[in-house]
Image: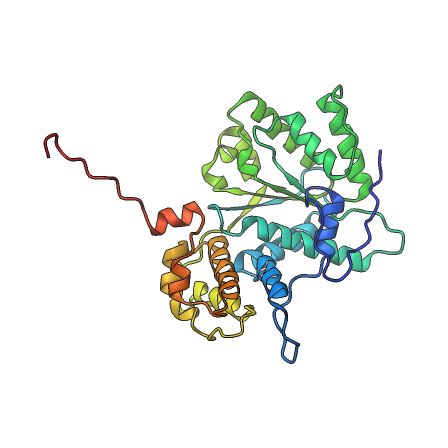
Amino acid sequence: MVSPARPSPPTDGEAAAGTVTTFDGFARFAHAAPPTPPQPGQAPRTPEERLAYHSQFVTVRTPAIESLARQVRTLMILGRHQQATARPSLIVTGPATTGKTTALLQVGRTCHLAHTRRAHPGDTSVPVAYVLVPPGATAKTLAAEFARYLGIPVAARMTTAQITTAVCHTYTTAGVALVLIDEIHRLNPRTSSGAEAADWLKDLTERIGATFVYAGIDVTASAVFSGVRGAQLAGRASLIDCGALPARAGHREPFRELITALEAALDLTAHRTGSLPRLAPYLHERTAGRIGSLSRLIRQAAIEAICEGTERITKTLLDTIALDHLAEEHYRPRTPARRTRPGR
C-alpha cells in the first residue's frame, strides 16, 4: 500500500490549496495561517488586503464547536484501547447553514495540529481523515472516497472487498485516529445500494481503530436513523445539535454574542462599534439564527462597504444584500399572486 507523504506547511499567508478531501489538501488547510483581525498598532491594510480578509474571515468558536471539540477529545481517549467493538462515535446534526461543516473542519484542524506538535522527526502518520459521502452513495463509491483521501490506487476492475482491504490496511498503517464523515444524510439505507453502503460503513468502524464523527442535515429525521441499521448507528453515537442560535437562552443572548464577536473582527475604517449588536433582532429575523447566513451577510456587507467607500455597515446596507435562498424565503416569503375572477 502507498504511504502518504507529509506535505510541507504552507508559507505564512498561503491559502490552503486544493480540496480538504485529500490528505495533502487537509494538511495544507490545517497548517494555513488563519485570517487575523486588525491588531492595535498595526499598519493599516490596503483595500485589496481587507477585501481578501473579509472573503476568508475569522471562525468564531460557537457552542457547537466547543461541545464537539470537548466530546471528540473525550471519546478518542475513551476508545484508545478498545479492541473488540467499534469505538463510540458522534453525530453533528442540524439544518442547512448552521455551521456543521465548519465545526467538523475546525475540530479536525485542532487534532491535526496537536498531533503535528507532538510528532517526532520523520513521523509520517496521518491523524485525521475527512471524507464526503458522495451523492447516491454505494458501498464501492464510498470505499473509493476513503481510498482517494490517502491516495490509494483504485482500478475499475477492483471489487468492493479489494478496495476495503486496501483502505483498512492503509488507514491502520497510517495511524488514522479521527475520521470525519460529512454529508452523511446522503446515505439512504432504504435503497438496496444505500443499505449496502451503510453496512459497509458499520464494518469499517469495526476494522479501523479510529473515532468516527458524522455530520449531516437533520440526520435524526433522515433515513440514516431509521430501521435496524439506523438503530445500530444511533446506539453507538452521541448527538450534537448544531441548530440555529436562539435570540435568548435564559439570561444569555447567544445570537447577540455571536454578532459582537463578528463585529469585533471587522476591518473597516468608519464602522461604529456596537451598531451591529443593536441590530440583533433584525439580524436574527434576516437569518433565522443560522450562523452561516449571518456570517455571509456581514462579510458581504463589509465587502460592499469597502468597494463603495462608506467603510461602515448599516441596516440600510444590510437590507440591500440578497442572502442564500433559504434565508431570503424565511425573511421575504413570496406572496402568491391573487386570482381574479373572469371578467374582472
